[in-house]
Length: 432
Ligand code: UDX
Image: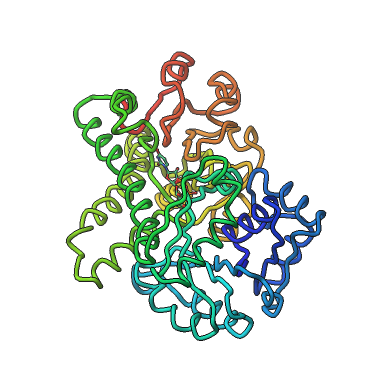
């Protein structure tokens, strides 16, 4: 496993638990040390156990020495493809350098399986370097969700493997089929494609998911203007099996290390292919998404009659979504930062993400304990729907701590009636 970040670490542990012998390679010695000790360097439910079990069994090891890759039959590439600093395209530097480091250790007949999310057409450009070593390149995109990564990897909705349609490509596809024999036997569909289609499945899936969220958030804007309730709308729409209820959660929108950068990179690649118009809607998807963060800020400001200067505002949540300590492009921290910029005294609480948040946004004030964070607040703004806030915080308990009675529900996950009955001014996103 070349690259032991989020994807690589989870995948390495999962492959070991399927019975394979796995060596994870990464250039970051701190990461390697944690993983080798059976500890995930980030929060992911179930991963520590899987890592520890793999390391204990002797099937899972980690190193920063690329030479350790020699002798493996399959080399998964799971390095990051961040957004380029000066454009919306993907930065493929890590894919190229990882491959260059791997190539000298390849043997004839080895399979190199790219897992990183790359612009369509990338794999074709890497074929030659792999073939020159007598090995075969396939593309095997990954669809795991943070917070559900272990389950998604062991029981994927589908497995996609793209290869060149020749003898070596077919053989390499069969090797991957064997690697994933257990999930396939348990019912995960295996879809063999060409390289471009495999790359495109990933981009298209993320584009669709982001579009679904922005669609419902666009409906939230219409609901706000018309007095409708977007959560009831989503329930009613979701009963249509062609639409489905999942990913129709209106609120402050999507963030994280994947959806925002992936839809931008997808649009940038489409431009390069002369098909920018085909995904022009993704610009709207992005714009709607960012507008919802502004809307949440406006709700808070309006609740205070036009100014938040000096107001004590507690942000419930920092992670981009619950069950994760990831704060990359987190809508929660964006809203917090904007409110602080408007003069509010902002306190941020989160059960897992504060260490990461403090690195990225050191100017914000963090309080780990939920109740301590709420004490004397003029308003609560729920921005990450952890159970700690959505289920375990009762309006009466919050009222016993806070000074004010304003709650802004940026994830539409609280019961408006219960909060209003307890004397709170409840403000949702697209709910009257
Ligand atoms: C996503 C894809 O789901 C996954 O298949 C891909 O491999 C990586 O990108 P992830 O980034 O882990 O996974 O998060 P996801 O669960 O998709 O949520 C993304 C964002 O959308 C979060 O900020 C979440 O809060 C938001 N979201 C999700 C909504 O605003 N509304 C919804 O209804 C669902």
